[in-house]
Length: 142
Ligand code: CMP
Image (cartoon, rainbow, N blue to C red; front, side):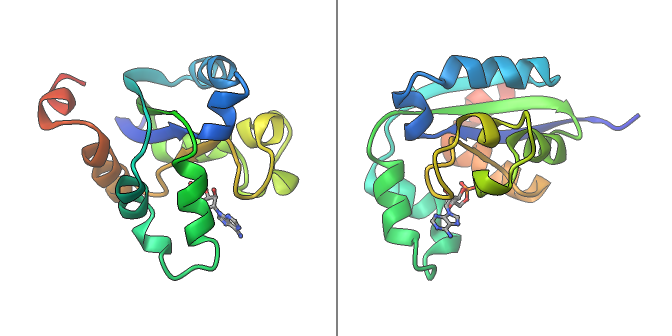
């Protein structure tokens, strides 16, 4: 049996504004995740730019930053066994057109950009992303 692991997730502005946040949180809980940290916030331009800095050379970067700052998001720390990999399975493919049945993006995403949810892509990224949004004191309490 693998160890409990934490990962980081964002319910994006499209899903929050259309009232899908509760359904997404339920789906995550029903998939075995425990919510160990959660906060609603609105990303500033520089927060969104920094968070997605790895994509800064991509053609969709400016549009992605605009989208991620258009309204409130919900940032979460999630825990379960193999959390990073399992969250990405539950989220589904980046493009909802390619997402498997029953996944968050198949159910709730509008497009490849407005795709309802973010999840860390590796344990190292999860640690960085958790630190980006939660204070050291909060992380110690998780
Ligand atoms: P996320 O998993 O948060 O990581 C990067 C985000 O960029 C992705 O979800 C989408 O919101 C967005 N994205 C990725 N690929 C594209 C694309 N081809 N066109 C527009 N947005 C994209």
